[in-house]
Image (tube, rainbow, N blue to C red):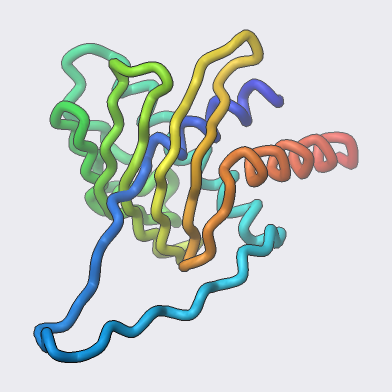
Length: 174
């Protein structure tokens, strides 16, 4: 279970999101700094992370097949792959979750860099920014870097460890 979670974590994080800079047309206005969002590992964040890992696992493995340019969602939409650029267009792994956004994933590097931005709607509502790296080791995939969820920044390794602990606790309880 731990290896699977590590692999899916790495895949989700591969879907690293492009940072979007916002600004107005008024160059004379003083920039306004957004207030920082507290980064607390709540059950909702851990659950969302697990959902992301599951969502991107199938995309990642499909993209490893040479010549793959599109991965259809089980519930509709697709992920269009052009080199390192992955574009999620109403991609739905299950018909309930819908993902839109753009990722840059370079499968030729080690560790694998992932960055980008994804917006989730449907069963989960969230804006995600990914800036992470995936490594393959003796224990499977591991991820480092940062993930921003609705403005709160998290260390990927910490979220992955919390998700793994939650999965183990759920397996032990059920």
